[in-house]
Amino acid sequence: SSSPPSKGSLKSLSHISPPHQAVPSFFSIQLRKYRIQLSRVHRNSLSRLSNLRKDIDRDEAQLSESIIEVLSRNRVLSNGGDKRKGIIISHPISRGHEDG
Figure: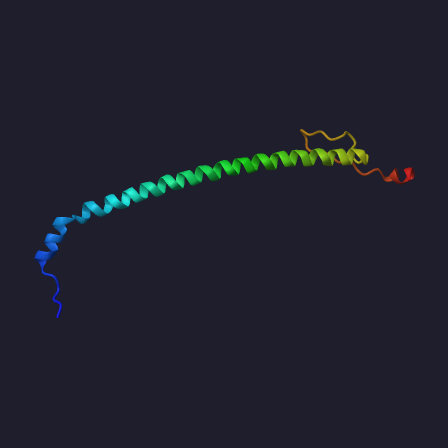
């Protein structure tokens, strides 16, 4: 039957490939690779996020412009809208029905 390995064979194995050196260096290399990949992914997602934010800001600006346009066309806005203060909506004109 198979006998457990003697201390001598273990010693010779550890002499061929010292585990305290070979294994950590392999893992540190892998870790470095993964860190580089992760930072690349992180940078890409950050730039994507900032692009999305720019798109959202642009769309919001366009949307508020068109809202202001529509509201001022309907004479709901008193001052045409001050963009610095945001959209200021005055009370809807109650006598608007008179125009027909």
